[in-house]
Every structure is written in C-alpha cells, then in structure tokens.
Length: 597
Ligand SMILES: [Zn+2]
Image 1: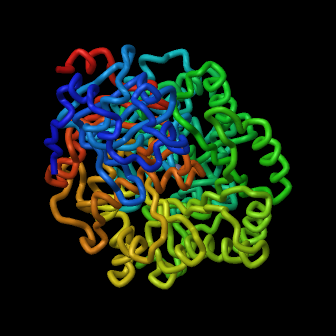
Image 2: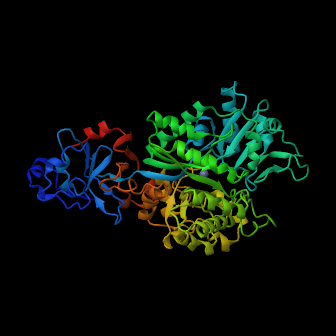
Image 3: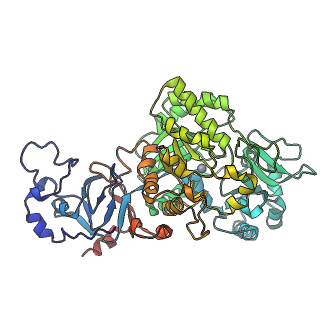
C-alpha cells in the first residue's frame, strides 16, 4: 500500500502549470470563498514546512490517504496528493522529502500519569526488572547511593513476583534496608511494599483497622502486617513520608514530556491530578509552571482527583481549579473517580465472588448511590467524568451513575469515559453506546501475561473470563473506543499498545498465542482510538486528531507504513519526527531536511 507517486518531483515544472491544475481541495481555507477566478498560487505560497513523498494517513472522516502536507504557522494548510503541493512552496519554505515514511496525527493518550510517573522513574525505579532478587538488589543499590535520604521511595514492582497472592513481604526489604523506611509502589499503583520501619513510621500495628477502600495485608495467624498495603491503606504510609518537592515534580514532568513526545504523543489526559494534600502530587501547578515557561510540549487535560473520603463539598474546589487553570495548553475540565481496585489482588469490584474466595467481591470505592449523586452534579456543572473501573460490578456502577445523570440533566455533551474495563458483563456492553460513554481501554494489558495467567484466570470462571478486555465487542456496538497507556503502569509507546490491540499478543514477543482472539481489532480502528477518538475524549477533535486543512499541525512521522508490515512488527516502528502546532518537539528537522533529494 505504499504510495509510489512521483508526479511532483519536478518542482519547477509544477510551479509553471496554471493554478487550475491543482487538486480539488474543497475545505482549503485559502481558496474557499474567493469570488471568481483562480485563487492563484501566490496566495498559497510560503508555507513554513512542506513534507512530501510520505504515506499520510489523514484519519479524516473517510480515512483518506494523502502524500504531502503543507504547514503554515501552527496549522495544516494542505493535505493531499504530491501533485498539489508545489503551490505551497515559497522561497522560505522548508521542504522535507520523506519517502517510505508514514505520517499520522499526533498520538493522544487518553489515560496517563506523567508527573507521578516521571517522579517515579527518577527515583528508585524497579520498572523492567524481573523477580524479587532483582528488586532487592536495585533497592540495596539505591539505598547505598543515597545515604542521606531519610526514606527510600520507589515504584515499578510487579505483583506477579509474589504469585499466587500478589502480596509482598516486609522481611525481604528489612534484609536490605533495616535502618530507614522503604515505600515501594507496584507498577499499577494500587499496592505498596513496605519494610518494618515504614510500618512503624506510619504507626501501623495489628490493632490498626483496614481503612475504607483499602486493606492492610496481614498474617492470618497473628494479624501482624506483612508488608503489603492495598489502595487506601497505602495512604497510611504516604501520610508519614516527606512530601515530594515542587522541583522533583517539575523534573518528573520534563522527563515524561520528552519521552511522550519521543513516542509521537502530542496530547494527553492526565488521569489523576490532586488539588490538595501535602503528601500527594499537586501536579496542576507543575503543569501551570511548565506551560508558563512554554515548556509544556503537549495539549493537556487534567483529571482532577475525586477524594473518595469526601463528598460533593469538594466540587467548589474543582470549579475554582477549572476557572484558574484552564488556559493555553492546559485544561482542568475533568474529574477522576476511582471506583475499585485491581483484579490481581482481588480488590476489583465484582458481580460474583472471586473463585476460591467465598464472599470476596473486591472493593467498591464510592457507594453506588453516592456515585450517582456525584456524577449527576458534576455532569450538570459541565465536568467530564473519568472513571477508573476494572471489575464488572464497578463498571456497571459507573454506567448506572451516568444513566442517572442523564435522567436528571437530560442528554449533555459530557463525554464521560471509563478507563481500564478489564471485565465487562456482556449485558453492559451495549450500554456504552446507549449512554454515550467512551470506552477507554489500555490495550497493552489485553494479552496473556502472568498478570492474566497467574493472578486473574485462576480466580475467574471461564464463562466470565471470556469478557476480559472485550475491545472488539464494544467497538461493534458503535461506541467510541479510545486508548490510553496508563504509564507508568505500562509502556507509554502507542505502537506497542496498537500492536497488542491488533494481535492480542505481547508486543515484545512475550506470547505468541492471541488472547481471546475474537476481541482483536483492525489497525485502522486501533489508530483511530489513539488519535481522533482520544481527541474526542479531550474535546478537541475539531482542531486535532486528524490531518486536515485548518487543523493544528500536530503529527508524528513514523519510519515505516504500518499498513504494509506484519502486525507483529508494528511496535518496531520508530517515530522520527513529532510536531506540535507545526514545531518539532521530537526529532531533528535539520537532519531530515538535509536528507532531502
Ligand atoms: Zn491510571
């Protein structure tokens, strides 16, 4: 499907042709509405940047292909056949000839944690390590390298290292760091592994009750805490920890932006932005600071964190934040509600008990009737609600809440979305479309890794396990499906996620059998979920998410056309250039220009 047209290679010849030879561009702003006569090449001349010879997947309404793009200022002024581009080349136009590449709209990540992820990666990072011994070695090394730090803070361990329970042991950490508290979050952020010093610092004893929405893992015989903390129980320790500094957060966000831009990402929704609390990330100010310095190299929507221990009295603070922070590249227009935990440690809220765990149905974070009231008020105030829901009960509660809001407020353009969607009861699948709820999947989770095989499938009847990550089934109903990475939980590389959505196998060769193959989706749909559909989530599909005349020039240049390679190679593709509003935020424009001709 490469596009071997070379009609405009002879630039001078093309320029000498009468203007009427140009391709029809019904939406071209420069020509439209001009009364009579040819628009004339002069009115188009002088684009800042022209890219030719590429396979341009425009992601417009008919998923049209183009070969060339012209950009002036921050906008796309041409997207069409090579034959029409010459009119846009003036004396000061930079022209890139990029045969063999594919251009897509800049990727948009609908669920990601750039500030906390960046801080985590710059701390005691356990991501990418495999097994307890590797973790302990890394913690010991980090502690030795930072003798001055009163606490060791880290993240990125996998629950599967502690299979079959997923619960870690404080004594292992005591063995490497006996003198200082250690607090390590799991890669999914729902569990913490702490040592005895950390438990002591937080005042956790066997008398400490489990907090609402949380669990202190205990020795069944003695009742003593064993070193694992689930969800709200983590707060007991973080409250005792020194706060993360503003500078650490700025450094973290800078790190994340560079990485995200490197993956072709030009926009994202931060899935948890705290407004208060000393120990948590008040990352809204971090975004504001970088935006003011012109360093916020992405269009950002902040999901303001709903404190589940409080009620609607927190809504005025959201209204205030929306007024104060929504400008330039930042919008604080969404509220994030976490409705359950995760499947692997049986904290996801389930319609039926976990197999072998009589009566255990996980955690419901917000009481369902209170959830309905909260969502109704937020919807009425014009907020988008971004839910976290993993178990089939939590997903149903979120859909019920949106249904209640619609009954009370009428149909509004709320674009509420539910993230994660690990297990959807088949009866609820048609409700996404019916309620205009966007299904926000993290497709990198939809293959049979050990989280699935060891920590999920043993606790789920096969009849229900069929509905794990049912992406194709939701898509078939006509619902809007968007994708996000949930980085730093998982890789933020959209190409890995797209590959897994298409193959239902590990993108790095982890597995070679598709997991529930009937839930695979096509490449075009997977690309849409990361571009125009995610733009829709962020209320910006009118100006981003596709490559069309008049839209912002947010785009990514890949080193190969994804439609011409085997699906298992999608994640091998590299992003050679990322443009945000026509300006490079990744890649070397000079080097690419020199490669021309
Ligand atoms: Zn998340």
